Length: 132
Image (cartoon, rainbow, N blue to C red; front, side):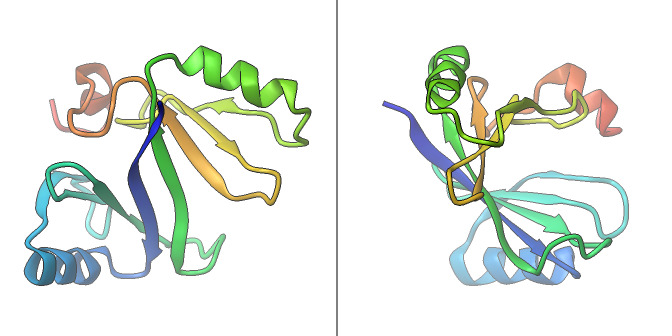
């Protein structure tokens, strides 16, 4: 069964918001984009929280998307496509370190689909982020 494994929140101050979750809930930092004000990824050891910059204000601050860890991403995409939802799943850019696919439900709520999971960066994607 696919499992919800991450939630992403957009904010204008990633450091401030990440510090809050680390200090209040003792979350640990998994990864940080080296760019000042860049994305910060936190974990409680099972569930992950992506704190994403909202530099361009393309969407409101707050909940942005959530993510499923699955065994077979292709099978999930095929199930979505059979439902004829207007927005079809799309492959995520290679520089994204975690999820392989982005999709949405019938109401337009975005979610990621990942076979890799959200705990470890893929080395080829980590290098794109300046981490390798």
